[in-house]
Image (cartoon, rainbow, N blue to C red):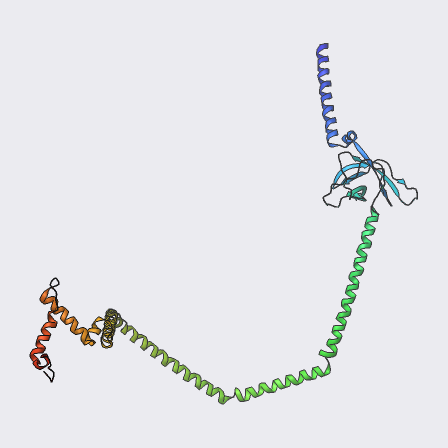
Length: 350
């Protein structure tokens, strides 16, 4: 029985030990106790006012907690400000162009130190455990609200000055309107213009839009209406006539097409006849002027006689036994016709 109780007590104690270990792990993981075990380095920053800052106040960089205030603020040598010792996590690198300011967080306005980088890409960072004191921004906490209120007040003053200038310009413009646009002379001219317009409208009503002109206009409109009706009837008749002529024109289309084809063929024949006539005229011209073989035969009597003798000799003797028979026959015929010319002449002393 005693051994069973001891065994139960040991199990309960072991369970409680494991539970405490898990609770401690959760506290270390989600609480700030783990920050105690992180490696840190220190920086010193001077502020003209650090109201609300105390030992253990958080330090934020880009919204992330990167350390705490190591000691309470200490007065500087001239008693014109305080110096804060900042304890930062060793794995946090502060850009060299970053500024340090006093801010507030939460509804209660708890003071904190805020590191504000410029946002530019840089490879220069503040060295760890820097001996030099860094100058922080002026103000902090409620002072920031006061400075912001002062800036807003200055901007409001600038806006009010602009409004005053604009009001002066509006007053000047209204004065010019009252003096020039709304002067007595301008109003009198406006009245005269209205009276002149009224008289003109009366004249138009009396002369242009009188009863006689209205009657003439009505008559002209009636005549125009009658002419339009006549034109409509004539157009209808033309349309009906066109409808009747349509089938006739459709029947004439094949005949017209054939006539076009015949005219095209006749045109081609006339062109061929013209070309032949031109060729014949050219040949006749060549014959008349003696150009070419035919022209020479027709115009040169000697050549024509030789050509005739050549054909006769070929016909009588043939090409192998060719001899000039035509010349001999011509000489014999000449002797028969003129025997006195063929006998030799004798001298007077023979």
